[in-house]
Length: 158
Image (cartoon, rainbow, N blue to C red; front, side):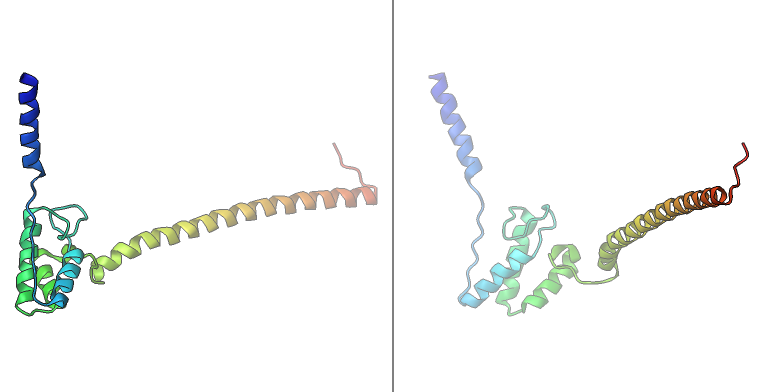
């Protein structure tokens, strides 16, 4: 009997967790519905980590979906809605941030590390190559002097 009560209690709690709030937004025009889906998939939830507002269950994402629906119903274009959301939540809210000084630095700094690392690698490789070629030149020079001395009949003093 106790076991049955525990199972029923578990099912009751589990059913309450399974219930999710689902927002349903509809438009008379199917084109507006496509634009709504496109916008909600391209706007990032400010609270969630790398999740768009279409998939997020956060309250702020729900508010953003409601606002996108309202703005589309008022006749605003996608660009105007994106600008509205960027003004309200910052550039982070859009998955395709604009190219400006900050975003350019985000691309240029790692590329500069790669460039300078490659230059350093070439410098080290060239200096080692020069050192080994210098040693081989000295060795060849010593061998040539020794051969010349032996041909001339000069003996090396020891």
